[in-house]
Image 1 (tube, rainbow, N blue to C red):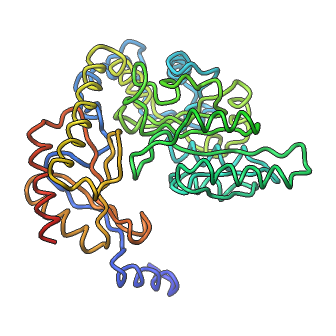
Image 2 (cartoon, one colour; image 1 turned 120 degrees about the horizontal axis):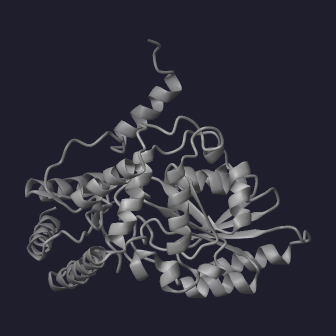
Image 3 (cartoon, rainbow, N blue to C red; image 1 turned 90 degrees about the vertical axis):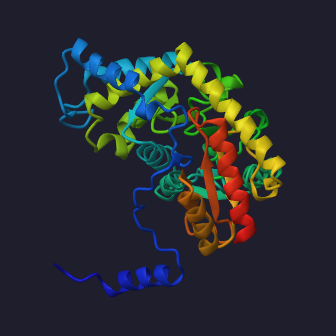
Amino acid sequence: MGLLPKKLHTRLVEREEGNTLRTLPKDIRGIDFSSNDYLGIANNQIVFKKAISILYEKEIVKNGATGSRLLTGNGILFNEVEKLLRELHNADSALIFNSGYDANIGLFSSVPQRDDIILYDEFIHASIRDGIKMSNARSYKYRHNDLKDLLSHILREKGKNTNNDREIYIVTESVFSMDGDSPDLKALSLLCEKFKCNLIVDEAHAIGLFGSNGCGRIQELKLQENIFARIITFSKALGCHGAAILGTADLNKYLINFARSFIYTTGLPPHALATIIASYQYMTNPQGLKERELLHENIAMFNQEKERLGISSFFIPSSSAIHSCIIKGNNKVKQIAQIIQKNSFDVRPILSPSVPKGEERLRFCLHSFNSKEDIFTMLQHLELAIKKI
């Protein structure tokens, strides 16, 4: 086997020397405060058995899609899932992608055209940034959740625009994956409407948690008619795999023709699609509502308890399931994580360069199945670890 080229080896050495080298995690056993399985659906036996029963009922005995959806891979379940998504999310169209990453790459690499402008929140997800890099449009970041800064960018671009065909795309998340906070979506929507910009919202960490039946922040605020595209994923609260882009029928047609991450990949296997159906059925039934209520109770209690312990100043304010405790420095945040892990809690550090240097953190993900006692005890261990380190 060939040796790793010197330039690549040098980059690895630099990561090691800077204590920023990524490695696959060991199996950390403990009470889950790190996964995206907010409603416990990933390990839910009811959903698991229902997915299998859907395949049996429809007499689908296939392990794979056998090809891309434009060739042999567009089985009956794709049509059923996309119909379900259109109805539940009040959308004209829904197009399934193999993952949130694929959806973001496909959308942002194909939709914004040369001379178009993309204005994106500085904390936007890495997959969106990668898609933007693949686009021919010009892009600029605006300060996190700062509508005044965004407005200045819009006015700048509008002021120098001599091309009536130029489009401006504004990109944000309804719940940010690392900070757990949200933008003022109503004000953002009004801003886009006023200046005729196209608003794109990634709802990955809002689906299952907010809105009627867990359909997300956009529907909770009744803004779906004002959004150019919504990206939803099934790998967080829905506990399975895949993603979809919601928008107009014309956007759907365009993506089928030009989104390369859709065109040139094998479709999701039937079992993945059956699981999406089963997860949505569970999420929208009374048990799903109960799980959402339990989760929001845990979120409220987590916020109250960190206030009581006097450690709230370390946290970014959040009313979502994601709570980030800023501990500067990779070494420090690793040490505190290890202390908590030794006390049987699965809490993971987020290190630079995944986040900017100086913004290293412990990222706590709350779930409907976390007990009150577990939340109390874990935060007490955090308080002691912060004092110690």
